[in-house]
Image 1: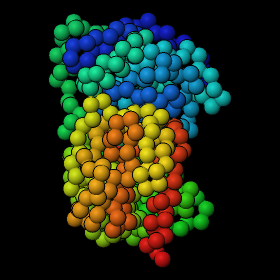
Image 2: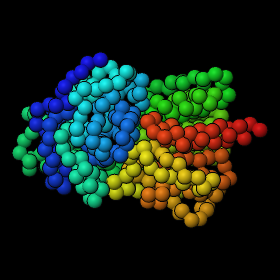
Image 3: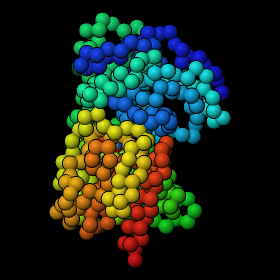
Length: 380
Ligand SMILES: NC(=O)CC[C@H](N)C(=O)O
């Protein structure tokens, strides 16, 4: 393991928000420039899993935890093959990473993957700004990329918006691959990859499921070609209002009544498939400490979130949909945002948060068992 002290970089860097607010600090990771949607994560641990979550594609993540990089980077925790965040913002990077699994420092890893970051800025003030004004476009510029403030601001204002962005095919697999069941194989699941995290098929494999991970462009024929016991729709980046293709595939699955489970983007797609709308939250939910109530049991769980959009469905009544009755099964106790949906007449449900929870609490792991029960029910 190396003990790089690059965390104390002297290269100047500047962060420019689209509304003109500017923060000055030092380069962290790669030196250069980057653009994205500024969002904050309240997770105090699990930065490797955050960085490698494909749902963060085109987002610049601000860490509210003041110390980042303390445990370095290992080869076991990534959720995908690369870092997906488009930029990274930290208050006080670790100078000397220390952990028995660490292979290199976070600063080195960001630099090696060409991810531009900034450190040494007041992340608390930045987070409060985003919470008050809402998530917005941002640019980070370091070293020679720094120019006149007005020029940088103009470039940030030209960057693409997250609203209306269709991004799944930019992050998903292009070839189907199979994650084998661990132990005895009990079920086959077709998982439509819209930006899937590695832990999700793993949580299924642990329950005897052989998971066929299909590209985001998979058709209903592709799904049924593997003769699945259940169909899964993953998390993923972008605006669910653009996900017309997965919505139509999901409608075909609902039509046939195959057990169906969706996570995050998958929940938004179920919402749309049932005829509900989706909308952009002011600043979203990102972190591993969000309280959610499972209204089917009354239990409250602490959960991992990463979403900037949400489903617009009534909380207080059962809705009639083309696929039978549907209800909101889970709700966020901070702000009453819809966190889960379930059908009452067909074996289908979804959650807006992350029961695979890496990093994070394991309170919601029971949802994978619910999916298994639906598949068992279908066989009985
Ligand atoms: N993690 C996810 O699947 C995120 C879904 C969607 N891109 C959102 O921001 O709400």
